[in-house]
Image 1 (cartoon, rainbow, N blue to C red):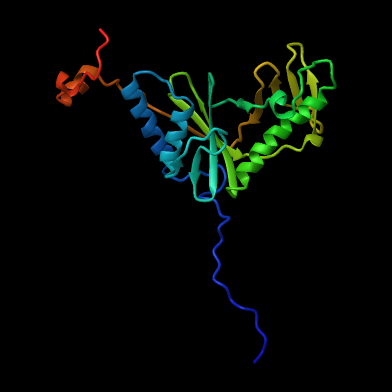
Image 2 (cartoon, rainbow, N blue to C red):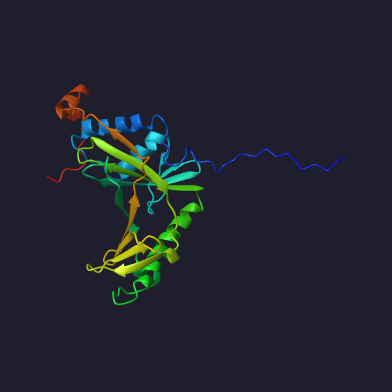
Length: 249
């Protein structure tokens, strides 16, 4: 009998639900429908954080699982997403966004004190190390980790959606400076481009992200707002629906 290599049944589990930034074909219509419903029922163009997470999860058939870390609030198979919203005067022409990316406290994580007289590269490296640890912890659970961003006009009539891989940042590739407001700003060494801002008071960490040219942009026709009393009447609402459990009056 000749020696042969065994044939195995294998499944490639590393393939994400869809290629990066190539949303499913029905995604624009699903998103538009969700925004139309929001505008009609809320009566105001207010779409923030957790609501965007839930809408995005619904649109791609994923599970919305709010997390404390904020990097894996949406899960579908081997892929997790964090979600961000940014307001823009004109989402169609916006080229870069500032993404608030958590609080990276070097006081808590490293026991350091805030001292703007020290070499800024020391706290800058620590800020990135905190971020990198968060990303590594999530990547242990999911093969693919992404951030999806909704850039929205003030009235939600135009939205720009894009996503990118959520990555670790090699501290060796960046340098840091204290600015006039005593915030720490990080630059890419090769391009001198400003990429990070860290505010010592509050420890807020911001990443500047370029919007790719192949982003999704949709325009939405604002719907009429549903009248509250009309909706309640259509439900045959009466005060009998309300039970007073405790009355402190």
